[in-house]
Length: 354
Image (cartoon, rainbow, N blue to C red; front, side, top):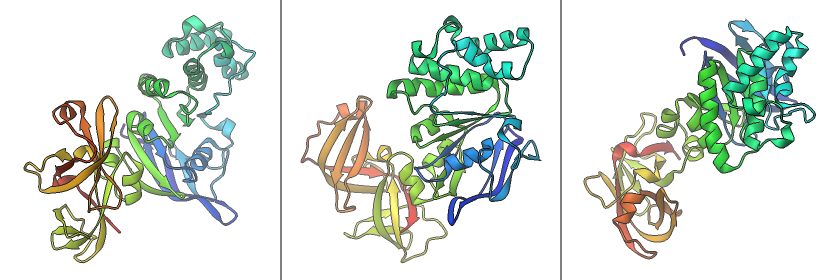
């Protein structure tokens, strides 16, 4: 994944005075699994439609292999779009659905048969070749739609909320399956999703969009561990926020509690800030951690893999959440109303302008 397959240059899309996409620039690499992540109205679907050719940029350009495709019709682009609804033909079998695009191109029958068989093997459905879509499960229909999109061997595959119609357990299984198929097929996938877990699990890189603008892009680890804005910190995973003021090299909360953090150069002494720490970075007991807080257990939620503990503290008007592993939780008999202390490291504290 070294060369840029797709280059998005200062792309904007205006609908009258509304800027659905506002000055986005991105390079997406060859054979990369890239996620466009954001809430409803962030511009991610509009951007995807411009990549597919169903919308034309008001400003900017879209280059594929160095060629500007911004004004090329969808059917003349080496790009396929897989819709959330899958849009399978109900009167056709699995094999016929997969073959449809190749038949429209009037390819030789032997080649069509070979490529359809290849795709059915890849999505692990050769035993269902003669079934109709209504006879398939949701996950199987999703695989057929994926095979139909890939059989034409596009340079780029766009996926619009591809797992949105599946239940939670199947969605988790298909996240790994999509990643496997993408890696095996060796083409670039761009997926639009509002599901942070989907993006973190599947993508090599993620772009976070909000109100048509690009807030941040990077690897899942960079996005999760080093959010650049408070919105990104709050949107990805769960985050505890503490209002504070900068005093020298430390932060001080409204109740006078001081704690340490790595303070960005853009923030000065006396500034009001919002400090943030992930629930899994908080540990029971102060130990040797630079920071600690004491609170009262308001509620607990057992999730099997972990125990979520909600604390009332003077640091924040909102409860502070700790996420304890099952092993850690077993060693502490916690009850609602208990007073406990939790500690965390200065390096795990993120600081944002208030």
